[in-house]
Length: 220
Image (cartoon, rainbow, N blue to C red; front, side, top):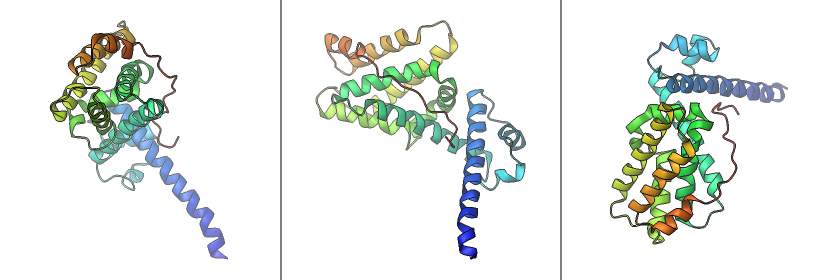
């Protein structure tokens, strides 16, 4: 008898724990996007609308929470790009499309953008999420003869730096045309990668897929 009743109770408990963890991550991402990482844990739990004691059921420290929030944001960003480029055969077009979408996401999803910008150069030390996907796309384009890359690590660092600088540029100037700025930067990057001018122009002019960014709420 007890085993029959235990399963629904266990499921409800797990669902409640997942909602609490999601609320904490969302609160952390909001604070990161606002540049307010150094707040007390009590303020984080108040923003998440949970009790202080519940925090420690999920994270040992504030830093551990922020790390989880960063990984969630990067995985969300990367998963969106993977889904939207999955039908593209040309690896150069995959890279170009991903970069163009990323530039436009700074306006469309400012919270996601804010978390990525808050990471800054630390993004180069991330082993999951967005950066490994950038490396993968560049490597595939190189192996297919589409990009000229002598040192993959250097190229990844250049692309990551360019993407972060682009995001900051767009954030700092609300009147700037994000699409035009992104495509202009991409043209320069493609030429750096050895792509001929006509081909680079074609890649930048490709029709972009329609997309809806999922909310950063991990319970969604």
